[in-house]
Length: 174
Image (cartoon, rainbow, N blue to C red):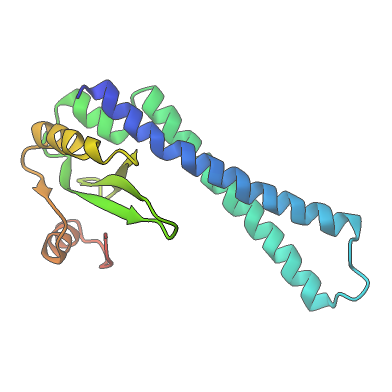
């Protein structure tokens, strides 16, 4: 795997999140349109109206934030300023501290596969592989080659060690 291939996996994360953000934003716009049109406002109490307006505001803000952060990620990957890509370019072999594969099982069947990389900047970057389980060994080998001192695999002990090393509050990384 080349750095360019790794960049594509980083971009795959943002596609789904942007679509999700657009859906949330569209829901907020739809609620605003319903409120503005006066639909079913005859029997609504002030509390009910406040809840509807709050829900619309929440959808608009959340959708905008999701889209904005993911567009920034795409821009960083495209121009090579994403922290993982910078570490690769500079040969910073200690930037990734801990990584592991994560499998999400969907309620209606199927699984999606990801590799989570926790880094020296205290952040976690997710490499989304979609349904391609066969890509996990390739990504893990890529990370192992580029970041040989990183801890591999999830365990509560690995999580506690990472959080203690970077003074992060506890919570499950898995």
